[in-house]
Amino acid sequence: MGVRLLVGTSKGGFWVTSKGRREWAVEGPFFKGWKVTAGLRLAGGGWMAAVASDIYGPAIFLSEDGEEWEQVAEGPEYPDGDDRRLRQVWTLRENRGTVYAGVQDAGLFTSGDGGRSWEPVPGLNDHE
Image 1 (cartoon, rainbow, N blue to C red):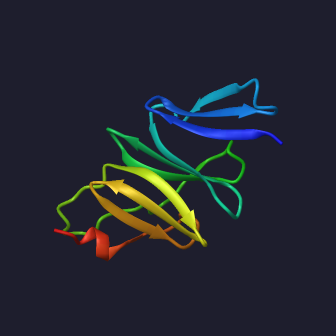
Image 2: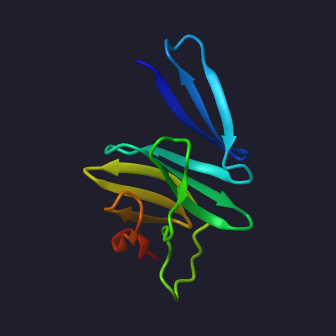
Image 3: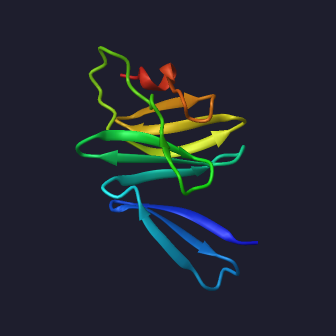
């Protein structure tokens, strides 16, 4: 059984793969011009990557195969009127079909549809 790791760097994303875990191959970069801040293998199949750019801000991408990526139209966002600005997603986790995104400025968002839409977690996000 082989291993496939999604490695995020400030210069894009890389796949690090190995069949026998003795020799490793590096493929990439992909997401050139974007900082890849988090990656997640979804339980139902496919991949999710969080990226950030000083120009374009943060974004979430989804892929079925890890080769072709689609940007999600509505990533995590603080509501209108909130003084905080989402700078980047720094962690992605999945539990029982819900994806959690920990973000900078300090906040947490959830997605119940595999990352296509996001809701803030009020108990954590509304702290003072």
